[in-house]
Length: 215
Image 1: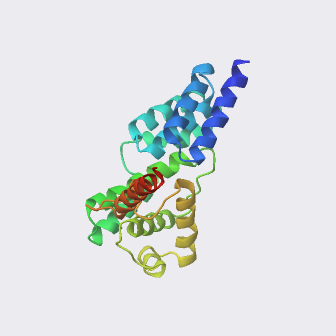
Image 2 (image 1 turned 90 degrees about the vertical axis):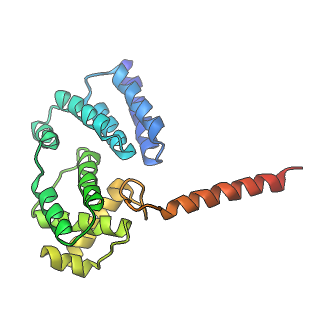
Image 3 (image 1 turned 180 degrees about the vertical axis):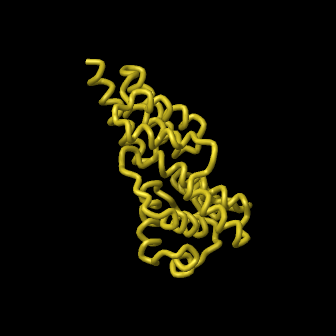
């Protein structure tokens, strides 16, 4: 009975996660964990939701709990590498190239942050790294687009020595997995985010409609 309730809470959390109801998803996953504390998937889903919300410290703690109960040794070892102090080969390469091209450190940091979130949010999906250049190129390209420091896919591919089609494929994977939008607040590092104006405009329109309908 407890397991059935926990699975129901977990399923609800996954639905909320997909709808970007992140606070609600976090609470649903926590409820699943309260009911059945030793199910690794519940902790992993909580980590994914916390990573999407930008709370990386809490996401790492949830991921650590997931590792404790994870029966798949290979998956557990993959997640354990996220706790390493040094940078991996993808982070090292993208940091070197972006810094070399004069991009602000905040934007470089956003690429590293995106890579961390991606590796958590793919969950049980395999993480395939045939060449560090493929992921580094996609991260560089995606973060540049979010921050208006754009290069074409051809220019990025030449920079990293991969094909434009590879940049496109890995970029699309990042966008779909992390649900990245233009000027995404998680990765935008400018002073004025254009999305703020859209939010203000939407709030103003809602207020005007309310006043229009008022008797």
